[in-house]
Amino acid sequence: MTDDVMATPIAGRSLWGDAWARLKANRAAMFSLYYLIAMAVICVVGPYFVPHQYTTIYADYVRTAPSLSSYPKPDMIETALAEAVKRMRVDVKEWHQEGERVFVTVASSKAVDERNARYLDRSDTFDDAKVEGKSADGREMTMSASVKQQYFFFGTDNTGRDMLSRTLMAGRISLAIGLLAGFVAVTIGVVYGATAGFVGGKTDEVMMRIVDVLYSLPFIFFVIMLVVFFGRNFVLMFLAVGAVLWLDMARIVRGQALSIRRQEYVQAAEALGVRTRGILMRHVIPNLLGPVVIYMTLLVPQVIILESFLSFLGLGVQEPMTSWGVLISVGAKNIGTANWLLLFPAFFLVSTLFALNFVGDGLRDALDPKDR
Image (cartoon, rainbow, N blue to C red; front, side, top):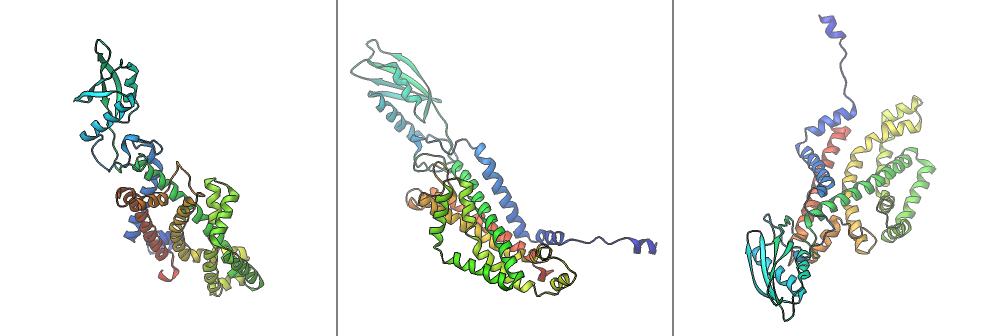
C-alpha cells in the first residue's frame, strides 16, 4: 500500500493555473470581472431588445425625463393634440379621451379635408387615426386616434432620441475602442520594450532613441494626422491611436526587462543554449504581465477620453453613432436642465473604470511572482 502511494505522481499546477486560483480568491476582482462581462453582454445584445432604435427621433418627446411608467402623461396629450391640429390649420372645438382613444372635433371656415387625419398618424403620440363623422356643411369633423404608449426608462436627449438605446450603443463603441486600441498599444509596447531591454547594447540604444524621437512629436497632432490619413473608418482609426499609445508601455517593459535579464533563471537558460526568442517568450514576457495588465486598465479610460476629444473636433465617432465620452460631453452642457443626459452615461463609464481597476489589481496580485 505504501509503495502504491509513493508511486502515484503528484499533479503540478502551471503558472496560469496558480494565477487563476489566486484570482478566484480575490472577491473584489472576481465581482468586477463578472460585472465587466455582464456590461459587455448588455451593451452588445441590449440594443436588439430595447423598445427604441438609437437613431429614431421622437419630436414629441424632446428632453423627456426618465420614467418607469409609460408616456404620454395626461398633460402631454393635450399639447401633442394641439400641435397636430395646428398643422391642419383648423381650430379645436372639443376633445375628450375614452379609454385608449382620443376624440377631437375640429372646425374651420372652409370645408375640412378628411386627409387631415394623417397629421395625427404623423405624431409620435397618436396612431390609427380615423374620421368618425362630419357636419352637413363639412366645416366640422370629428376624428379619433389611439394613444401610443412609449417607455423611456433613461429619458430622451436634445433631439428626442431614447437615451437607453443610445447609452447601450455608446457602451458597445467605447468598450470596443478601449480594448482594440489598448490591445494594439500593449502588443507593440511589450514586444518592442522587452526586445530592447533584453538584447541591450547598441540595439537598445537605437530602439530607445526612436522612442524619444516619437515622444518629441506633438501627440494630438500626430493622432489627428493618422486619423486623417486612415479616414473615418472606425477600426483603422483606433488601430492608429493604439499605434501611438505604445510608447509608455515600451519604456515600462524595457525597465522591467533590464531587471529580469539579470535573474539566475535567465542566465541558466542562456547557458543551456536557449535562443533569445525563446527566453523572451518563456521567461521575460510572462514575468512582465503584472505591470502590463495594470497599464492596460489605465489605457482604456485614456483611449475613451482621447476618442471624446477627437469626436469634439469632428474626427472621431460620427453621428448617428455615439460613445460614452460623447454622451458625457453633451450631458455636461445640459446638467442644469436635463441632468439625466449626464447621469446615465457617467454611471456606466465610471462603474466600468472602477471594475477595470479592481480586475487589474487582482491580476497584478495573481501574476506577481514575488507573492507566490
